[in-house]
Image 1: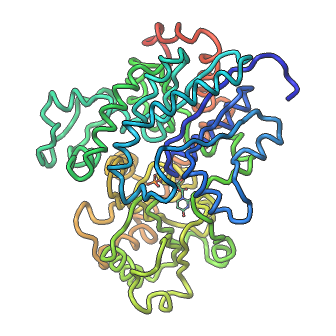
Image 2 (image 1 turned 180 degrees about the horizontal axis):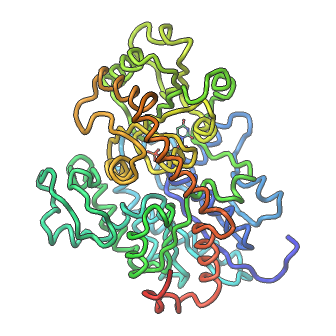
Image 3 (image 1 turned 30 degrees about the vertical axis):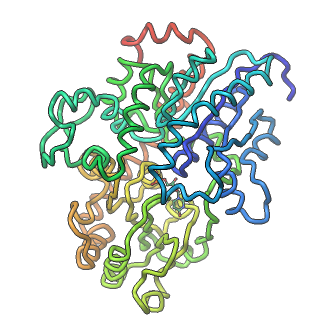
Length: 478
Ligand code: UDP
């Protein structure tokens, strides 16, 4: 490293899921490009999974390339207190109960030791995923600036932020109050209670989720800065309302921020199949891409209905399925000319292919952003957590997608008819017109004076100078 003057040092703690890891890696590279020292803390089981996915590479270190280009990004791993073999998805509640109870002490110790090892740092910053339940306590203990990283929609953030209002207005606890309209959350466009997050609608399904949200959003109120993986023009009222409370910066979509795209960073938890050649053999806008993200476990019945729907629709498709066991007998033979089924791919590469004309998605936030970026309209099939809320944004507010089955049962005829609506005819043209506009908004956000670029510059300036004075100014900014 040529420079010798003290650098600010940011310690990053991503949440251990693909949809959180990707934007955190991008943030690491972008901060390092602004002369920050970065320590990226990876959980050992994630490190292990990614290393396994990139077979032959050995122990993966995301930032080898970045370091070669002169960036000071350190990569370290830590245990989450569970064995590598422990199935964290199958035992979600046990895992997160344990993480809430025992993990904060480990983090606290690690932050202390990272700080001791870099005595010349100009300042330290804790940058942790908002969904962790300990950042404010750890930041306070070490007297460091606390940056909360929210990797999803500002709308979801705002609803969590105002749990008190939901309780006051009788929408929490949820009483199956159907189509009740929630129009009192600052900056959030009127939303039906059926579009609330799944852990509010059905708190008993996975009780730990609501516990995490309650605790995490108590903590976030003590954050010095909040970064949000959205775009100001997409959720302007919501971001303005949040900015009245705490300094909040919309800097998304983070995986398209300029510095990242130049860097080759292997960050997939699964090995990627290359679909390029197959896609190149298909006509423009003729392929439906189907993926339900990294967490959703779709059941056999749903797989069978979608498969039959695909048969009826005669569309070309790529379907991301971790196992083909549940597919109807003979299905793969029937579709071998027009269907490609792979366990994982580089989603951005696929979505950016001119052959792709639609995306059947679970509405994970990253998938929504990536689809918007590439101008690919969506069929929405949300499962849980924030997915129902993202569906509302995509279908009702932005009009760039359609529902698969409006909360009802998925049927093969329904699937075929929605595929036809998305890929062919008048409705398809309208959706494409709308998403083209949204795609432009996202891309403009990274132009020299685009909103995400500007907000990121402002955030870095605010980190460096006048840290706390900005909090006092709130109300008069942006
Ligand atoms: N993804 C991918 N390959 C696939 C399927 C998904 O790279 O075959 C990526 C996708 O690009 C996105 C992430 O996995 O960045 C999924 O995040 P999202 O928020 O959409 O859903 P989640 O997995 O959190 O439910």
